[in-house]
Length: 396
Image (cartoon, rainbow, N blue to C red):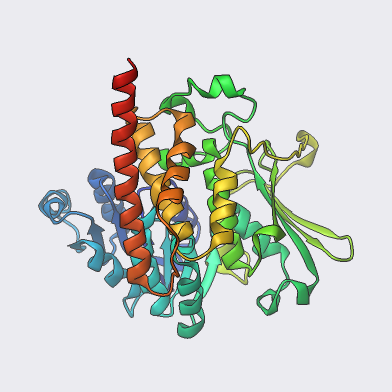
């Protein structure tokens, strides 16, 4: 019986994880559940799964959750240290790292340093601290399994000895597929009037608001490019982005002999979750088999002139050091401002590029340096926003 901690239990990945666990009650038990602000939803999950621990962000939410859990045995904790505690607890076997954004870095790293089996759905952990993170995986004997559908597909298409190096196992290139988001056919002029509601309506996947906007700008694919480089020891040049609107082919690996291996499936996150949960075994995920006769598959290159976030991410990875952490922090501020209707869609990459230009990269040789770069980038991003609004007032 595996004991599972789910970091970000009320999000879409957390919900899909619990759906897979429901198919296999004899194999898995929920050890801990965490949530950011959806206290009522967390309470419902605790009543249903009876975890040993529940963790909320704010200590002020503890009494509220306690009132909703009057008949449960669950112990309630709060804060970043509590997240790290349930992620690294000796009785926890597996950690689903599904907290969105930079907030997921420290608890995910705690799970790694405790040598856990880590199912990585938080790409920002690798984007911000890829070198330190992957070194910790090696030093502490953790098992790191990717959950993003694209990275899980690549993982399935690579030979088991790929950590020796892609060239040594005959890999020439990784093809990272992208749906293209809801605006892939929009003109540059149409992109100027995009609303948060439009950006959050993904044509293929059900996701949270932040990742939906990232998908719309293609920054999500840029972050995934960085993540792929760290996961599979690839250079940015070895990872090619391919737009595939149907989201049936989740990614591909090309070999030097001319072979191209692909992983296909219906667009349902339960498939990669089940794959990682049971690896190297295969278990039922509750997902129907793919009927290829019903699908027409298209592939074409992305347009980086309309979606410059891809270029910014590739450049940040090429620069190395703290550049990816700066990119991520600036993007989080920009997306938050866009969702609050304080920044137009087309200005998201403008803000990110301005922060990357103003804040020089430094070596990412320790966690304090990375977290400092993250905070400095956020300060510069907020200053840029203030200046942006000031300029708007002056021009009106």
